[in-house]
Amino acid sequence: MQINEATVKKIAKLARIKVTDQETKSLEGELSSILSWVEQLNEVDTDDVEPLTSVVETTMKKREDVVTDGGYASRVTKNAPLSEDNFFVVPKVVE
Amino acid sequence: MPDLLDLSIAEAREGLDNGDFSAKEYTESHIKEIESANKTLNAYILETPEKALEMAAKSDERMAKGEAGLLEGIPLGIKDLFCTNGVRTTACSHILDGFEPPYESTVTENLWNAGAVMLGKLNLDEFAMGSSNETSHYGEVINPWRREGDDAKLVPGGSSGGSAAAVAAHLCVAATATDTGGSIRQPAAFTGTVGLKPTYGRVSRWGTIAFASSLDQAGPITRTVEDAAIMLQAMASHDEKDTTSVDIAVPDYRKELAGKVKGMTIGIPKEYRVDGMSEEIEALWQQGIEWFKDAGAKIVEVSLPHTKYALPAYYIVAPAEASSNLARYDGVKYGLRVEGDGIDGMYENTRAEGFGDEVKRRILMGTYVLSAGYYDAYYLKAQKVRTRIKQDFDEAFKDVDVMLTPTTPSPAFAMGEKSGDPLEMYLNDIFTVTVNMAGLPGLSVPAGMSASGLPLGLQLIGKPFDEGTLLKAGQVIEQAAGELPKPTKWWA
Image (tube, rainbow over all chains, first blue to last red; front, side):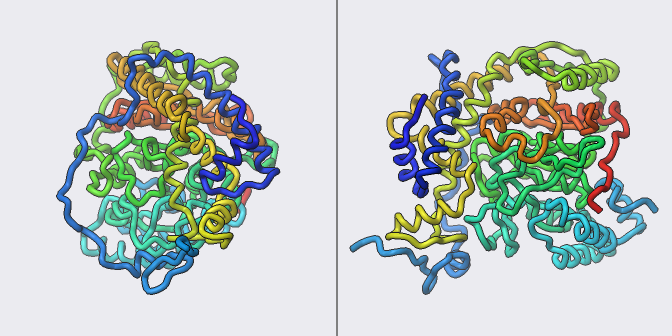
C-alpha cells in the first residue's frame, strides 16, 4: 500500500498534528512501508471469524448510576496551562 | 553484613524484620547509589529522596509496632507511566511537561499500602512506544551491560528501559513496569533481570497512562523469580475503577512457588523457530528444554500457526488504540500548550511540538487505519486475526501447562543501531507480542550469556490467570542457570 503526500497531510489534519513538508516526505515512506508490511494479514482466512473484543471472557460489570466522586473543580483544573475561575480557557471557538 | 544493595526483596524483608538494618538505612543506601550512578545511566528522570526517607521513617514506625506489610520498607523505582499523587508524571513526553497528577494509580496505591518506599520515577520510551528507550524526551537510558572488551553504549531495551536498567544496576530492589507488546520482558532479557507481564485484567490499569488499552498490562521487573511473585502479589487487585480488571481473588504466589514441576508438560511452539534465528539463541532454547527434562517435565512440540501475523496485527491494533487514547493531549487540560491560529492551530502546534517522531508516526498510522473507508480492511481484519491467534493458544494449552520460547531474537544492541528503521525496531517484539495479543501472562528469566558477554532470557507463556505455574516454572530456569555474571560497575 502506497500512500501519498496528500494522504499524509489529510491524516495529519485529522490527528491535529502540524507536519512540515520534510516530515510529510519521510512519513510518506515510513507509513507506506509499514502498511505494505501489514498487508500479509490478507493471507489469513478470517471468514466466519468474529473480531476479538475481549481477551478474557467476562460479563460487562455494571454499577449504580450515582455520583461517587467530584466536587473539586480546582483540583481538576490545577494542571491546565490556562484556567480562570476553575474553567479551562481555550481560544475563541464560536464567532 | 552483606551489601544492602545486593539483597533481594525476600532477603531484605527478613533483614528488616530481624532488625539487622532499618528501612531508613536501606533506603539511604539506595539514594546514595542513585546519586553516583544516575548521571551516567539516566534510569531515573525524577529522584524523590525526601519522599523516600519520609516513607522509610513511617515503615520503621510500623515495623516497631509489629505492623509490617508485604513490602514494608522496600525501596522501589516507579516507571513514569504510573500517576503518582503530587509527583510529576510525564510518560517521558514533552506534551506532559510539569503534570502533577491529583490522584494515585491503583498499582502504586497498592504498593504504598503494602509498605513500599518510592525512590523516584523511571525513564521509558515516550508513551511506552519503543523497544530501546531511545524515544524518551528525557534522553536515552544506558544499559549497565557492555559487550566484553567493548565500551560501546548499549540500549537497555524498551519501553521499560529505565525500570530494567535500575534493577540491573541495583538502583532499586525492584521496579514497576508496563508491557503492551513486550515492554517488560524484552528489557528484562536485555539487562539480565526477571520481567513478568501478568494476564490482562490481573492488575488494574487505573491511573496508568494509556497507550493501547486492550493490550496494556502492568507488572514487575526484579532480580529473582521469588521477588516477581512478591511484587505481583502486592500489585494485583480487583479494582472497581477499571472495568477490565477481573474479579478473581489474588492467590498466594509465593506458596505456589513451592510446588513441583515434575510431571508438568512444557510446550515448544515450532513456529518460534524463525528463519535466521541465531545459533546462540537456538542453543539457549535447547538448553532450557534440557533443564525442564532434567526437572522431570514432559516436553511436547505445539503449533501456533498464526504466530507470524501477530506483529503486523499488533501494528494496526496498538496504533489505532493509541491514536484514540492520545487525543486527550490537546493543550487544554494539562501539560504543554503552544498557541496558534484559533483552536485548531493551537491543537496542531501543541501536538506537533509535544509529541516525538515515533509517537507521531503511530498516531498517524492509527488515524489512517481508523479513517473512513479503511476501518474494515485494517482494524477489523486485525481484530479477526487476533481471534485466530487466541484460538491457537486455546488449542495448544489443552495439552500443555506452559510454553517455553526465547524472549528476544538477539542480545542488547547498540545505541542508534536500529533507530533509523521503524520496521527493524518493531521486529524486536516478535517473540513477545503474541502474548499481549492473546492477553496471556508471560515471564522472562535470565538463562545465559551471549558470546559477546551479554545476558539472554528465556520466556515462559502461561494460561490465563495461571501466574503461579508460570513463576514455578520460572524458578526451574533460574535454579538451573545458577549464578550468572553481574555487570561490571563501570559507571561508578
